[in-house]
Image (cartoon, rainbow, N blue to C red; front, side):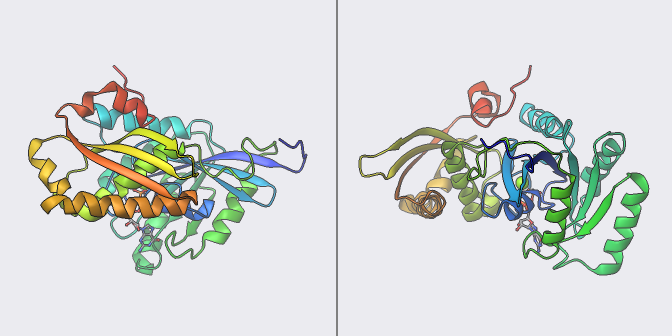
Length: 301
Ligand code: GDP
Ligand code: MG
């Protein structure tokens, strides 16, 4: 890597209640999809990272799972992964959806943040939909509790206000050579991203018929002689009764999920993709160490 002395490089942790728009923000800053987004809470599981470039500045974004009261093992692992991401970051961004707010999840986060030594930025998202007055009142309220250096009002979806935010974050990064090659946009392997893209389609196409405790496991990822990629994945559900939902009538649902995921993956990778999906029932998958590690999470005790 070049030893250019003008280079800057740092870490920004993105924290917030589920659905605040953290993944959308990371994708916007990176300029392409690296994290899956969903209208359903808790889509983000692992500490997925996006890498954004801004002139001579490399911004490493840690897109954390939403932090909330952990009960199950999976939830606890997600919470500790989230705070780990904030440790010694050059900036912590608190993302807030001023419409839904999700105060029971946001307020503990605000309290924990007030005690942290890192530099903090407040981002109120979804200005394309939010009503101005209550949004300003909320910004004031949060500002009274945490020493935010700066407040931004953005729409991560439309890009409104994102230029200023990116400029500011870039300005906060310390001098230092880039940690990653110029063209790298994520630390997730393509194999894992492929599984995430399938999971996103599960959420999109099944809506509320499937609880969020399903998983997509990468089985194999190989390049064929013609340069195309062959991907095999397993969709794991917790109950026998969920299997026909994922399969659909005559296999129509899994076919449709596979088609959409294959199309998207082919676009992201820029090559032809062959995707093979099958469904497995495993009541105890949420207690399976191997599945945790595949998702980049710590199984814990
Ligand atoms: P996360 O759970 O914090 O990572 O949130 P996501 O990035 O997955 O976003 C949650 C939902 O909010 C998705 O349906 C997004 O499309 C939507 N969303 C994110 N940013 C905006 C925004 O600026 N405006 C609007 N209207 N919706 C947004
Ligand atoms: Mg997310």
